[in-house]
Image 1 (cartoon, rainbow, N blue to C red):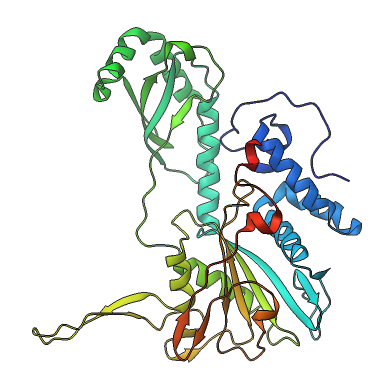
Image 2: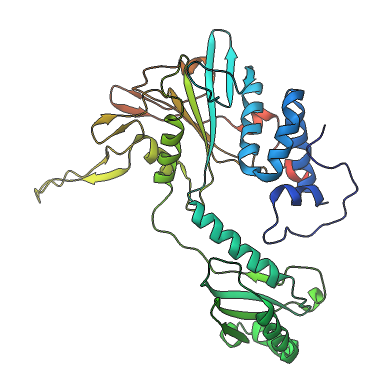
Length: 383
């Protein structure tokens, strides 16, 4: 059994606005997507045969979550572990994703993705994506649309019928040569615009002329959408995701490792991850003007120690990734030992660098290169 369809592919364009990742990977003929398919097929082939059908069906619906589980299975396989999928554990009918074994080491492993989005936010983003997808299908040989502002006033999918008519009327009036001359002089403010408002949407858009060589070529008509800005990072989303998984099983009879793929668009740098695990950074200083004595300290708001209390003591440690199908050899990972775990794990036996506390000092160690572990060169997408 294979994940993707065995067929001839000819489509070289980008994914549709609201297209599922699995569907795009299955129909794209691009070389880089083909290399991703090959990698995923190799990983999939390592699964036990009785797990493949369910995994494939879940891949179609929940690509990010299943991709991360498939990555972890092959990651621990590369590290020499034997893996049991969904092992039975005592006193509950809930099952963790894996039980991994190597020599005298046995660890329960649970996978989780952290996106920093509520269900309501995901629903609204899907609604917005479907709206852009409909507008992108408007045939526009000479122009692409830049969406300057979009306000959707309803929780239902807004109609685009009247807006489409307005856009087509506008396109019929535009002079490509004149608009292109504005672009050449960087006179972007004077490009033609359209504003439309009804009881469902309020939209403002700009018509950008394409280069002469691009006239009539296949592309999405929506080329730009409003830029999203955020205050703060992804620390709280990481903490919340870990806490949710920590509560799932209670005390276990073996060490418990929570694995988190931090996919937040707000950022998931090592600074965010470290702040979520050990506590956010703060500056202290003296009120003495002659000796300010400024120091960086960590607040007591980390995942292991928070507000004076030891937390998630049933968890032995945390593995954090920021991995996508396209960045496997370049992606980072970090392993954190819980200094207060009631079920400690000897992380040295895993054979990877890890971060830990020694005499109240945090010792951070850089991770290994995943490219070396998976034997993938950094240019693998186009090789």
